[in-house]
Image 1 (spheres, one colour):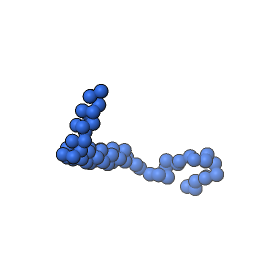
Image 2 (cartoon, one colour; image 1 turned 30 degrees about the vertical axis):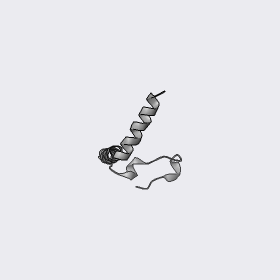
Image 3 (cartoon, one colour; image 1 turned 60 degrees about the vertical axis):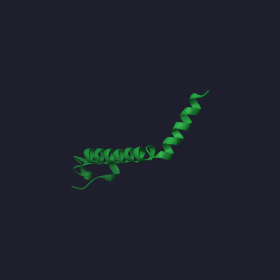
Image 4 (cartoon, helix red, strand yellow; image 1 turned 135 degrees about the vertical axis):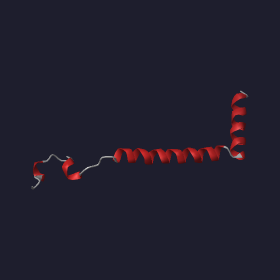
Length: 66
């Protein structure tokens, strides 16, 4: 069957052409979740280092001394 491209509205996506995308949302969710966990692990490792902990404590002490 021939598609009539000239009858489609501009920006219209023909879902029949794209095919079956079942499960793509779950895969995207898994990738985003893994990225968030990796970022959280990076933040924990940075914030638990001695230098950063000292800077944060100094900042908190300075803020509470007013």
